[in-house]
Amino acid sequence: MSKFKKKKDGGLPPVNTAALPDIVFMLLFFFMVATVIKEDSLKIENRIPFADQIEKLDKKNPVSYIYIGKPSINYVKQAGTESTIQLNDQFAKVKEIASFVNAERAALREELIPLLTMALKVDKESNMGIVGDVKQELRKVNALKINYTTKKGDISKNSN
View (cartoon, rainbow, N blue to C red):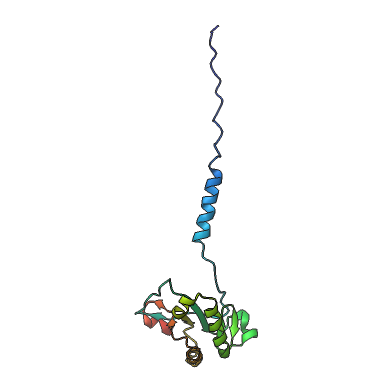
């Protein structure tokens, strides 16, 4: 008989979970910062046209979107089949644009109001008459910074 006994193999040591809460909070903060919140759900068809000379907007400046196009299939009963305007998540008439712009300005800080840009996302099949009406309303409320949203590409694709 031997004087010393061999230790029996105790298996793997337990996993240290002390750092687990730190990892969970780090992932939580990452997803909170990296997630983009969807602002508007489109109720219109919005196939924006292509352009070959485009310029990106500054991310610092506030931008409000006005969507123009034919209502999608789910909203034909509500808005008809002609091109219409969508402000935020609601269909709107041309006369409602002034109150929309004033509400957008009221939501901004004082120093950002002159930097507000109105971005028109117009479907390539839309009637330009409604676009002209929208621009006239924007002039009436002194919203003169207007941007047309397009995709970068060959302009010959616009006729499809």
